[in-house]
Length: 252
Ligand code: NAD
Image 1 (cartoon, rainbow, N blue to C red):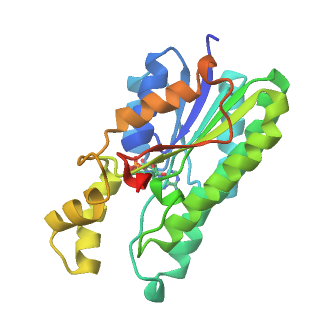
Image 2: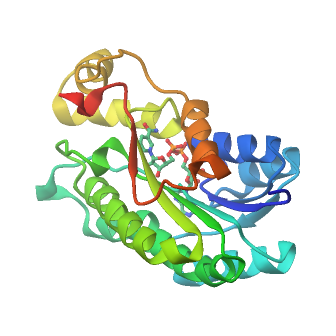
């Protein structure tokens, strides 16, 4: 299929940026949706995409993103729900407004965007939705209550949407990466060291890499390659699945 239109949220950085760049490189029209206007606009211009500034914790922004994409390109073939952020704190002191915001951006926004793109995909009889969950959508670790709850919920949303999308040619899958080398992970190393009372080197070795069979961080491009596959015709039979790309983290 030529001239596909893809919305990638959180595409100004990290995994989203790699996904947007890879899809654009394959000939797709890409909408870069992000809170970060400076990075997002510059990046969208570079890949020949279209930037939409959004705060995905706001329902109106989710609606505007879909409407603006439809106005600009006339349809939507692919939705990649990727935007997210991390906050590390024990439950006892976890800020309640941060909990609300994390569930808003990483669970409610994917639901709303799925809901708003549904009609155009259903009408065409073809659509691809890829939700960037996490290894923490499958297993838990301490101090990440909101993140882990949102990512587990996102797998539930993936399965439900897959069941509803089957008869309309819409596939919906989740990807569950372990630690990927992005600003989100670089920033959390110091936070984990503070909470656990260990050095930053020990955070990488003991917390991030110890459970993995392959002892390294994942690159954003490795996740992007899986997104591209799930959006291809070759993946037509794959839906409702949560794809681990986790260096063997969950094998034990
Ligand atoms: P990142 O910090 O590099 O990029 C996240 C992007 O999301 C940023 O550009 C940021 O501006 C955007 N964003 C955050 N809040 C937003 C909001 N309210 N509205 C719009 N945009 C917003 O992070 P990343 O590591 O590339 O993470 C991308 C996704 O992958 C996240 O959902 C994350 O949970 C998931 N993930 C990351 C890892 C990892 O190790 N990096 C592992 C598993 C899953």
